[in-house]
Length: 249
Ligand SMILES: C[S@@+](CC[C@H](N)C(=O)[O-])C[C@H]1O[C@@H](n2cnc3c(N)ncnc32)[C@H](O)[C@@H]1O
Figure 1 (cartoon, rainbow, N blue to C red):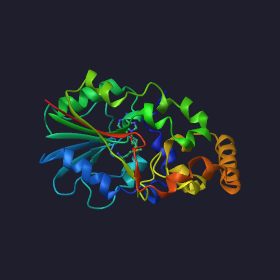
Figure 2: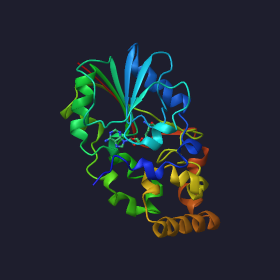
Figure 3: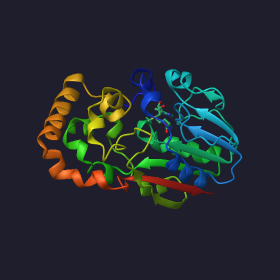
């Protein structure tokens, strides 16, 4: 069962490793376009919120709300599945890197569509990200509640009127340490703060995390990782399955 208060317990290092990447943010802001009133659902600490218009954040975790920097818009403690706003109160509803945590994703999408005529969602496509090399070190992550029955971007069309689905290649020096962000910097996956900042690793039992870390460490020391994946270190960016979905009435 997915827990909407999960981030009360796993967010201690979030602001150390999770900073909006400017290049990814530019793509998201382009999709938001001129919408003046924006609701950011599963807003966390406010990453990717535009700063030049009214933004209201919705976030269930009080710990995440407390980490929102000064100057960010007001935050309401609530869940995507029951947004406490009237129909079409906003121009745009945005949701970044949060959909996999929602208890009832379909209901959350219905609510997004109700409160704004345009929806912008940044998410990962499980069909792509589950091929990521780091899964080999922590395969137990695929059994976590947050990884179950994930929609592909095109599945969102069951609820939303999709007008665009774009691949967002992730730069090798991405400043936001989300799940696959360190695709070409494998040593980062041994860093405890980096692990804590990614829900797919932070939710694993310590012993499971330690076992995968030991195997990755050994493969890095022996050169096994570089023989398999070393070419990644030289790429400027890579499509690791992140998608930007825009829907409109
Ligand atoms: C990985 S963080 C992403 C935060 C932010 N959007 C970002 O891009 O940095 C996922 C967020 O989704 C929130 N969340 C979990 N369940 C939720 C739900 N049912 N409705 C809305 N947000 C939820 C978590 O509390 C957490 O802050």
